[in-house]
Length: 97
Image (cartoon, rainbow, N blue to C red; front, side, top):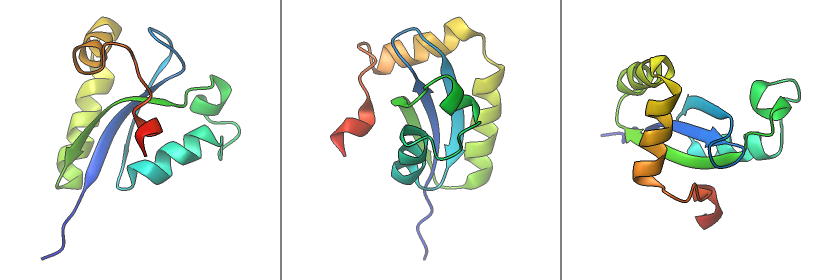
């Protein structure tokens, strides 16, 4: 059986800064693309959003897409609370790779 992994992630440019929510099946590669500004005119490139501050893992893409939609509809304060509850110092989680 093939193992599926999908991720919903939140990037920021600094503590309490700009937030970006995305979904991917390769978190390391996708975060690297954000850090290297692969898409020069993208939102994350324009606002220097490249610090991975939160992520969730899912087995199925449908679950990940559903969660991404939910998070994007949340109020900003709820998103910040989610990050703070899991990563109080807004540490760049990708630095551990």
